[in-house]
Image (cartoon, rainbow, N blue to C red; front, side, top):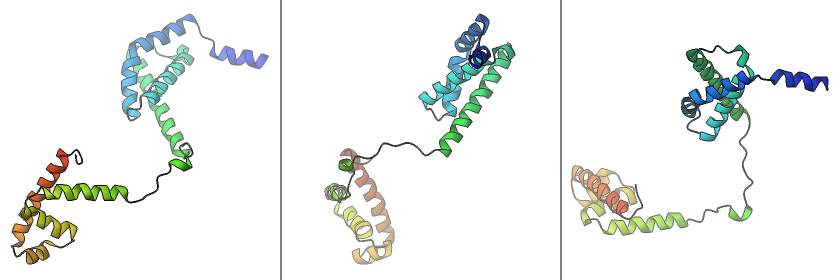
Length: 182
């Protein structure tokens, strides 16, 4: 029982301490949350936890705090920054918890996505002009250099480059219209 009384007395507060913390939250809560959100990578839940812990520490240290607004703000920022740093260190040393994967839900690569993408690109290629389509086929699909494609098609390398540039732009536009590319 004496140990409990010691612990309780350590955290006992006066009404002025409670009023101080309420005033701190009212005056600095929103700007502190905004500041901490930036420090936590815009993680709202973590930022709220940091603000709460900062205000708990302010309550615990209410008797020692300087009551000047500028000094209070600096103290709150320092405490919040240290809490964020401690949180980052903790996250770095502990492995992240994950749910065990459901054996029935584990994806098995079957090539369907690749086949579907190939079909969509083939359809889009049909909408291009024959000149654009053949340089794209020679360079991308048959993996030939600009010079090799120029020799096969019987046109100068500069023409291959130009047709390839405009052909890719046209292909991107067609795919975008279909909602496939961004």
